[in-house]
Image (cartoon, rainbow, N blue to C red; front, side):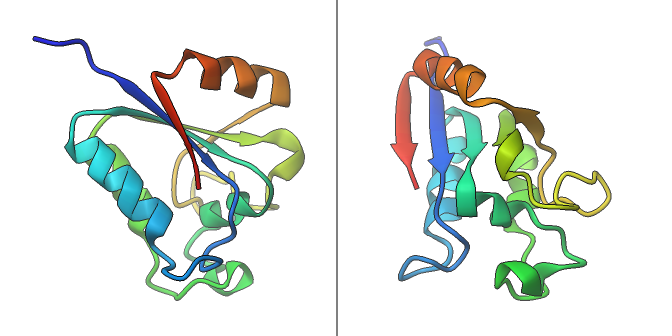
Length: 121
């Protein structure tokens, strides 16, 4: 059996900043279903993807937006947010759409370097 590969995803675009509001989510879901392990890194406006269901309008999200929350059910996921970009309340485990740990730019760079592939979303 081949070793699992790790895909690093640098999420820096705000929700609904692209033509389709689900581009980033669709890509990471497809990667998980294809057997990739995910390392998600939320920086800048990308951290708004983490805002919990109690405050979706502050991130420009519909009230039913829960796609990111379902990722751990599909496969191995580790998520990080740069401490300087943390959205108030987004890392609260009761409100966050995805369990996420704070990190700094240096540690984030090391983790990205360890990934087999990296995409910027």
